[in-house]
Image (cartoon, rainbow, N blue to C red):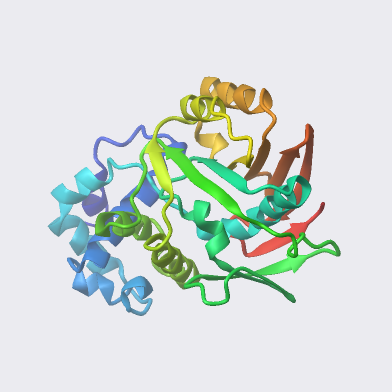
Length: 299
């Protein structure tokens, strides 16, 4: 029976809370097998593996039954994604810091996952009639630019250094890392998959270290380091909701106690708010879709 196939994998997770996104953990685990080539009949229905959408349930149920023990282990893993489409929402903030300070940027990202967003300057952006970034980049991010205002796309920008932290960092230069990131993208979201693959190609060429650490401990240590020749930008996207209250408060105290720029994209309602704290002024500079499908510049 259908229910038996699902329960055979998820037994023991009856009390998992909503924030653990059990459904995505299950779908990601199955997607991993498809991408690995271990579920060819199901792959015929997965666009991510060259298939076409159709009645996938019989093949899906067979995979749950045939690979039950491995899937039970895989669903224990937390979801780990890295959405490079969000860079289009953050781009204007980085450019604004560069414009105001006139200095190279020292990037510090918390919840960095594989560090793909630390490489934002190596991507090409097409924002309506605006263009930014290297024209030969493997990743082209296309987004609607809404509203009358425009981000400072003409501001000179130089990156001094890039570093990040994550509780479970992923190495995008390894086959295991690439498989992990791809498996948690829904298999029919072809545009997101293409963006991810483009970002992974950039990651092979551009170094960005991501340390295993919690947000508060790591940012306290990094902000204690003096970097007078660059402007420090602490940034994150869709991260704060996952931090325990105490850690989030420590992180915010650490950032607020230093003369640094703080750029963040976090949930608001049907879209995300992008805020920038710079020179002691904290303002909302944009609203954006969660995967960067649109940006409304407000600054």
